[in-house]
Image (cartoon, rainbow over all chains, first blue to last red; front, top):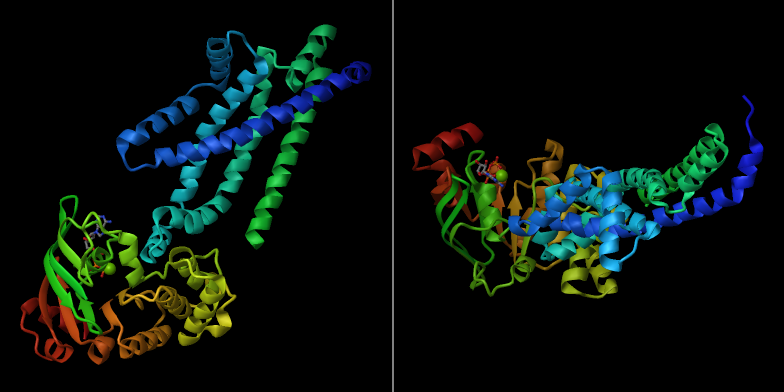
Length: 218
Length: 240
Ligand SMILES: Nc1ncnc2c1ncn2[C@@H]1O[C@H](COP(=O)(O)OP(=O)(O)OP(=O)(O)O)[C@@H](O)[C@H]1O
Ligand SMILES: [Mg+2]
């Protein structure tokens, strides 16, 4: 079997553009998903069952249905409903953010609940409000424990962004598929894409490991 | 100073405190003893509302703490608490542990919090550990930091929930020593403990609790040497 480097070279600018979009999509979704996740996680932990119910439903829905289905629903249903037209990039960001938000909410909740109850009580017994105790005592400790699962979630999100190819968001996988169908080749486009994804996910893991170690020595 | 009236506390169907009435005067040291599960911790935790009480009233310096208009955080600044398992903040240094609440709750300046914190650490004999982290301390040292941390809020009352129960025997003394000093300075204290020696030496009054009621209370000498109730007798025979 001959490996056609020439078509990879030909497609290199497109793969590059696609990679940049993949990075952009992922970073924006990670950012929105994290903010969303914190809010939803806190919402789910509310003592009032009635108030926490919508947050529980949200998490159940986005964790219990395939991301692929969510992307199609948002791309073909939700976005056109509000704007009157489809937009692959925006639909992907919305779908990835909402989906990651659900997982990140659970990471936040688990992180906060993993902190010994005595910490909250120690802080409250000194006259701190619930918010102060969370901010100065519980969250700083919980956030360290959240980094490994958050890193995991970010890596999953980068990989999942490849689903955007099916709704024509011109990210990395989109150009991989374009290359495959133009030349009827399998190995070159998909291996190239796989290696680029691997570089992205390994870089993400590397950065988070560094962050984790930095926090540990603090 | 502390007045507890008809205090009741239930967890689900489990009636843990049944009609407790206690008054603690200023500078008094009240020692609470009783078998495991009798409700001693719950009693202490009801005083500073770490547990929401089911019935009755708790007054701290004349303020009804269960009154809806009362901010419980203000009450808690006046009532320090020391826990069996220390509950120090592991992500903060010893000095930061002591400084945190005065900074954030009392909103005093950093310099003031620092100098006060160092003073308190000196008082509990831990000046050299100011920059250390809690995990590097022995149990006795941890508990002394916890006492300093509570004192940093300048409380009028201190609650101690088995402060020496989690310690190795050789460290019990150093913590009791700090508590004795506090008592001698006139601090109002409610102490749950199994240290009968401490109760005799420092306690003004001993309360024996069993199954959520106060079975007997008296001066340490009377209660230990001349217990009236059968349950008190059988408990004392096991621990003395
Ligand atoms: N948060 C809680 N939820 C449910 N039950 C509780 C809770 N806290 C305490 N209890 C129950 O209340 C009873 C009294 O507990 P408490 O901790 O006050 O006893 P104690 O006298 O301090 O015992 P020990 O000497 O073991 O510390 C026990 O039966 C315990 O199981
Ligand atoms: Mg107890």
